[in-house]
Length: 130
Image (cartoon, rainbow, N blue to C red):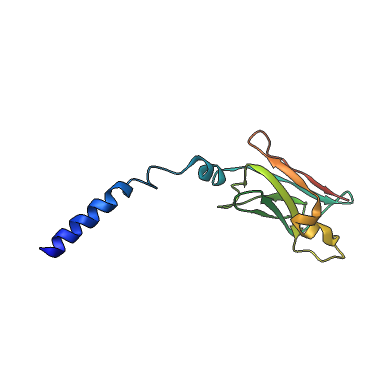
């Protein structure tokens, strides 16, 4: 009997909180999990890079990565292959290369000075490194 009463009291205390947190994904979280297509070509001193990885680092949300192909082309993936990047401002870096192939400043988003605003109105983001 005492156990039954305690269970009833606990249920009464927790009932007001039962609906909180449920009812769908908040708008901000949904925005961070929605991607838009992103592709492009990476060139260095006018010639296509033939390998490496392009990284788009957003202000908020998950990074997007894309392998550079033999023609310099890349397609970004965030959650699944080829899905693109989350919309918003991104800092860009190129990884997987040594400093003789590409200056070190391009290896980190904080030093590359390459930024893009990714949006649904555009899908081609060429990266021309000098």
